[in-house]
Image (cartoon, rainbow, N blue to C red; front, side, top):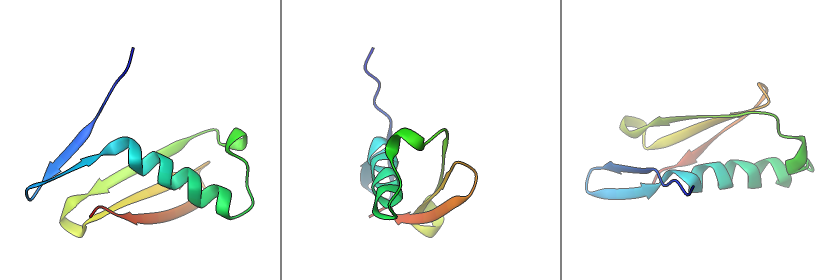
Length: 66
């Protein structure tokens, strides 16, 4: 089964899977391996124009929505 989730806000549409991919890229840029990811939490805050992520309960960051 293929699943797509989109966030529509202020006339823009964002593919939610892009946030997961970007969080994984940030994880890898710090010298980590994707296979070591056990959990990714994404918190989308349209009012701040950000998607916050937490990987394995301790690696944190933010991604601009637009």
